[in-house]
Image (cartoon, one colour):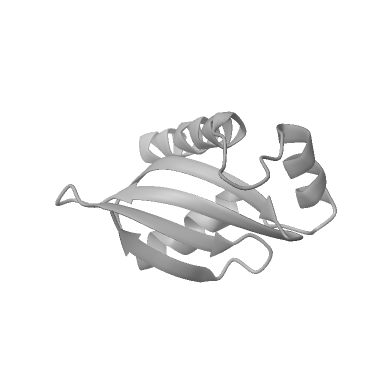
Length: 103
């Protein structure tokens, strides 16, 4: 139960980061992102975290969302158990991982 609570708190922290972090491309605000989720244009951050957990174990330490050329993309930064930092690009519409790059 405690792990479930921690996980939920962690997701809310990430949502806050998502809204606060500027992106290199067009930086949508919280309302833009909320409307896109409501319209079904993008999947919620919680879905992206579920996709990522199965592919790259580690702690998510940063989240951004970009809207460029009509396309939404999540950028997540993950630190693995060895302390290596990875940048993960996920298509926000489909949830498919487009790239994982070690930084």
